[in-house]
Length: 617
Image (cartoon, rainbow, N blue to C red; front, top):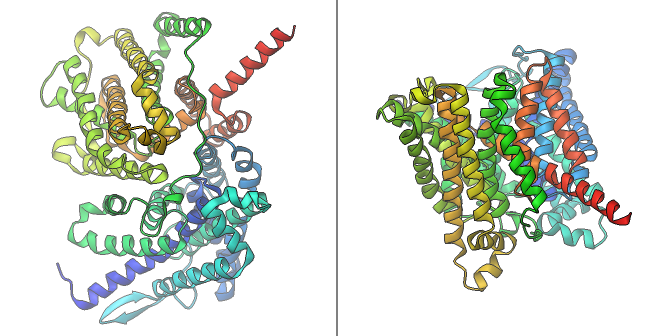
């Protein structure tokens, strides 16, 4: 490997230019989270909108003035779009359980994707080079793009402007105060609505600016939002949630490390940001510049879980019977019903972790995928029969959950969630690149049920029995003393530890159990599909599980069942339509706005209202 001084400097400058671009979007994300506590999954969409708007404006206006005016105007328009999202959607769900806003931002992602597709089309767009910055200069014999040097300067300038805004203006002081204790800021009479909206506008402006400045460097395409959002979250967490300075330092560390790491070990480029994040969080649980207060907001104890009344138990039994009759009533829907069962068990396992244990996971797909790969490898490489191979799946998932969970349970809030994401990405990257064992992106094929279960109906009934057994185990755990300990730690870790409970050990065991059940769902999935690919471990799978749990209602054991059923059925229906993303996103937004406490919460309120009317009569 040639690492001459000139080449090393070129790599360093490339890393610094990438760091400036990454800092712009990450700083906006950090500001939004610091003030509103919204995990804004749509921030990548704002970045993409900035790029598309800048492409249109820059190509229309032309010239030096037109280029920079187009970049700033695109960012300003994105700021207005961000304000509209905050006012019309997020403001209505601030009082919902923590992270419920993530569901709303996921709906926004889908709507924006289809809107961009309809306006600009599916083809990649190549924007013009920046006027007067379209050449290269030689430094130590290596050509360095002039635009990269401009970006290197823009990053610190924006950081300085944000510092002045936060340190020298009343608005900035209020933002910093809200980042530390937004409840106290509200108690002092500050108009939180205006503060939240303006903070969201500033964060959106920075995201749009980051996207606009990328137009001369790369093609503008429909994958920009999902490509950037995971890395932006990594930067925010490594720097410390709510810390703009931390976001800048983290962007530099990750971008420069990636610039040189790809030379030493090219395969590590997919994993390096998440490896850095994992190491930082293990050493400094709140990031480089974060504080314990930045991990999460105030925790409000939830109402105790109630046992099902006789009518509820009867309805559940009827639902199981109805599910068993699907092959008789509608044989063509057996495959869809199997997918629904897998989704229900996967969502229920995540709810055990989140709803009962209070441990949010952004990487639960790791254990779903480990279960699927474990079962597939046992069947294809060890020639095990279906049932023994299925048993290997949850064992593999349990081993992975025990390893990663030991580190994860030492954190809390968003930092815990992001460490689970890092673990999942490490597993995904390993599966994607370890071609000799996992087949890489070609996957593992030919994972079919044994002859006695090869009929779809038989396998469906087997899957139904497994899922019902898994759900019964989760319900039993939730109402057991072990479940009470997890819920007590969820509501107040300090009180639980003060009365002598070894909370960390209980949480670790809960993490392993949840991972095991997710692995069981993955094993059922593997034999249902006949193949396993790395996307079973991908971020999208984890996000789907989160949406199912939050959509159904995180405060109810029925929530993941209802959320998974609604998600799978709606997705199956709308994906047949031409503009399915905008329809799917609109339906999710309607559910979020109509039922801020999830489908289960809305059902409970409706039942209480009906019961109240009956008593009044």
